[in-house]
Image 1: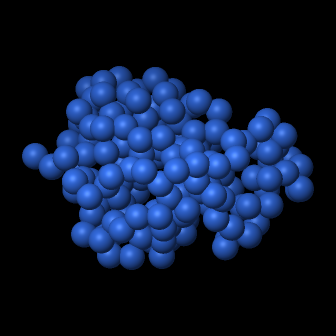
Image 2: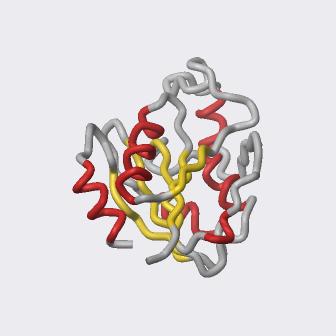
Length: 157
């Protein structure tokens, strides 16, 4: 059995809840990906073309600073990376996280929460940030997934 980590970014708490349930069901460790400057409600207003999240998502080279880069990923074979879907892809802070570490030889399994869309081009947008890693599209974990389904999902990887 390989050692697993659930790393997640959550802007509003929805992805955090899913990540905690997944980590518990998988028997995995948990790590929160935190921005150096937390997002405010105004920052997350996707209807405002000048909001922080809108500006970051328009600029594919945007790499929001992390509050820390203290995750010791060396002991993990599989890393579940969770995020809310923004503009049909992962928020650029996920690229910041992937680029802060060496994921060579590791399997990165994406999971997300979404108001209605799927992963879109998340794998393609993240792969360059984790050279040498295998990134796979995992699952959208909306609502209240039960422990048995989460365990079955985690056990696939």
